[in-house]
Structure formats: C-alpha cells, structure tokens
Length: 114
Image (cartoon, rainbow, N blue to C red; front, side, top):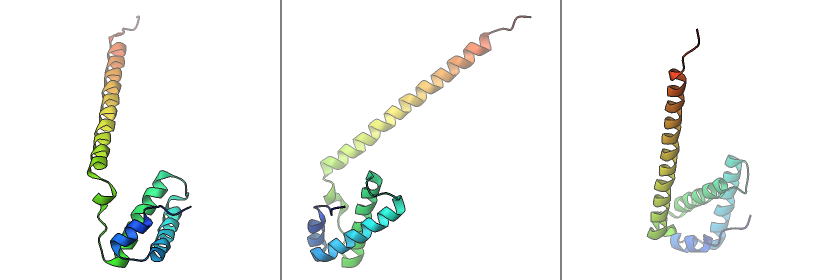
C-alpha cells in the first residue's frame, strides 16, 4: 500500500523527519493489517491512521491536533450524518413495533371454531 500524502504534513507538524514518518506509517499499517486481517477495508485504513498518529505523538512528544485533520465543517457533517442515520434506525424500529403490534392484534382477534 502506498503511504498517504498527508504523512509529510504530519511529520512537519510533529517535528520529525519524513523518513521516520514513513517508518512509523509502515509499522502502523502492519499492526492494523494484523488486527483487521486485511489491508483494503476502511476499518483497516482508519485503524492505520489512528495508530500512525499515536506513534508520531509518542515519538515526538508533540500532540498532533486531530481537529486540524478534520476541518470544523467536515466534523459538523460527520455529526449530522450520525444524527441522520440514528433517525433512520429509529424510524425502522418504530415501523417494526407497529407491525408487531398489528400482527398481535390480528391473531388475538381471531376466534377458533368450536
């Protein structure tokens, strides 16, 4: 896998060399692949990035602000998307409850022939 183009920016921000950043990226990518078992999923890439930032912070002693990786506009969009997905799940849950109660009422109302 090719290294992300954001590596030099994070390296300069943390005050480490690009070569060290590349070594830390390879280590983080290897650990993420070992944990997830694959190297082409979004879970793998997210874990690799998080692990890389953690390794850079440990190496340099400088906190890389995660807010700068996501601008405030993008962070707002992610929160909004989360709320929208919760509403979809809430609507599905309400529909299921209505369906279940209607079926219970339908079968409770039937009388067996004697």
